[in-house]
Image 1: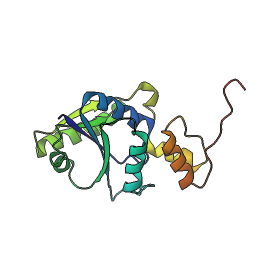
Image 2: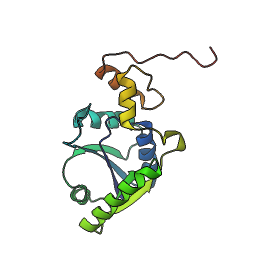
Image 3: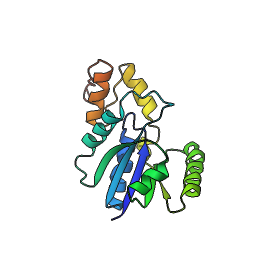
Image 4: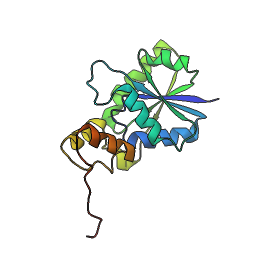
Amino acid sequence: MRTVVYPGSFDPLTNGHLDVIERAARLFDRVIVAVAQNAEKAPLFTPEERCALVVGATRQLGNVEARAFDGLLVDYVRGCDAQAVIRGLRAVSDFEFEFQMALMNRKLDERVETIFMMPKDTYTFLSSRLVKEIARLGGDVRDFVPKNVGKALAKKFGAEPVRRPAKGN
């Protein structure tokens, strides 16, 4: 079975993340969305909430699962019997950091391959940080996140999702 791990904070999951997950699900038998716990970040959602949001958004994909993890990624990948790590690249600015991480992971365990995937061009500007800021300020995030994530953001910020008028009105 070909297994890939897609690590990230996913705080929250965006349509860019979902695009990468869906494409990875077509390429691999099993996709593990590894929700990272990062003590340096102050996440909006708990790891359990983030896993539940991933599960809700990927329910139609039978080969995707979400799990929280902490520690070294290469140790986690080995523990999952995965063959590779998927990393999303939105822009050239992401490449330097991701390249360094891939090389470090290879140095720690040469069996762990890193595969870079670019989301659809319509999602290249998306980041979880920007989505949270828009939601916090009461903006409409429906074009940027799966429906369940939009509802969770509205609940976190104590607001109803913004209702835009239909186009052409």
